[in-house]
Image (cartoon, one colour):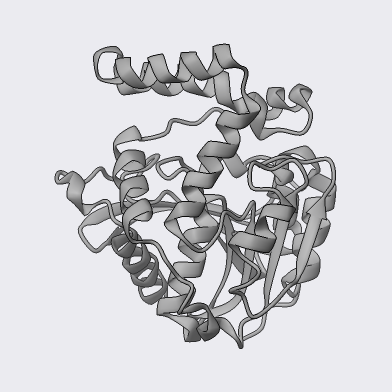
Amino acid sequence: MNHMLKHTTENIQLLDLSIHTESYGAGERIVFLHGGPGDEHRYFLPHVLPLAETHELFFYDQRGCGQSEKATDPSHYTMIREVETLEALRREKGWDKMNLLGQSWGTMLGLLYACHYPDRVKRLLLVSAVGVQGKDLQRFAENLMDRMSNEEQQSVTRLESEKESMGLNAFDEQMKSIIFPYYVFNPDNLTHVTETTINMNVNERMCADILAHYDLREQLQRLKGIPLRIIQGRMDLITPDDLTETLFPYLPTQDQVIFERSGHWPFMEEPDYFVEAVREFFPHIKEE
């Protein structure tokens, strides 16, 4: 790894909030859309940094997440505001088009942005895709519960009922200890997880918005001119087989790369293969 890589951080006022951004490397730019909702960009690191040898990797913490400013009014945590924040970032930076790499909830955000601004997306890579409807997020949660033991299911139910009294940070930590083993193909890989903090306020607001309003089935033909690829772990909570129902019937492309030894975080479980697949999809040479 080249330790002389260009690295910058910047806080940018976008709409009503200050948004924390970070970039590594130089070359064709890839804008990363993190998951959660409510997580922060740091979970991609250091796993994807080898890509910075050939590309500029641009990260930002979404509204209320990580080091970005929290909204004083929680009703401001919505999918559409997140889309408009990404568009405000593009305009602020003066970028004509963006290469987007979304992971988990970030795939839903990437698809939603591309439906609103198809002319502003150069290429779209969906990692650990969920689907195109709010009910697909529900399916993710149901698949997770199905993999758990009865005892673990009871622990989750108990935590949910005690969430307010125990505090959101304690809830987040205890919940992760139960569910994260089901996010990986190999439990030994849990030692490689980068510790992050999920803003549960953002998570609850955004998940409610997704469940109530997210439905792109009628809009996805707008993506016809955009090169699009899916990277999915064989053992993800939404499996490649699930995607034949939740995603592919509605997409104009069927380009999928399956990572046989990965769960929900292929960039962490098969990092070399991941870097190779991302490099192959996004051109190396900066296109002006």
